[in-house]
Amino acid sequence: MPKRNIFILSVVVGFMFWAVFAWFKIEPWDSPYGWIIVSLLGLSLGFIGNESPWLWPLGIFLGEVLFGLGSLVKSLFFYSGGGANLFFPLGLMFLVPFTVPALMGSFVGFGLRKALNNKRWP
Image (cartoon, rainbow, N blue to C red):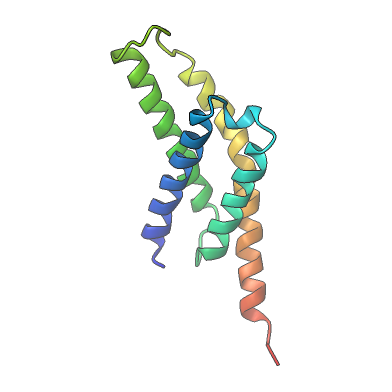
């Protein structure tokens, strides 16, 4: 798979990851499963990515930021009784350490793929 397609996939996965948790009205970092799922996403993308395992967590991060930006715009312009969500900058600061497990998972997946490719099968 080309690098560009995997990056686009990682952005979509990051967006959808956050959207699923928002549907349940919980932030992923508040859920015990959020950390596990984000690391498994990084592992999967690192495994299918041919190179640059650091790029896939950036795509996940970008997808999460885009979802948060969409949520901010929705709360500003389509007021629904809850008020404007002005915690977006604070949320960005929380997303950085939250995406670190995806980075570690991506490197593990990349290493696993390299090890499987280098192993000689009898």
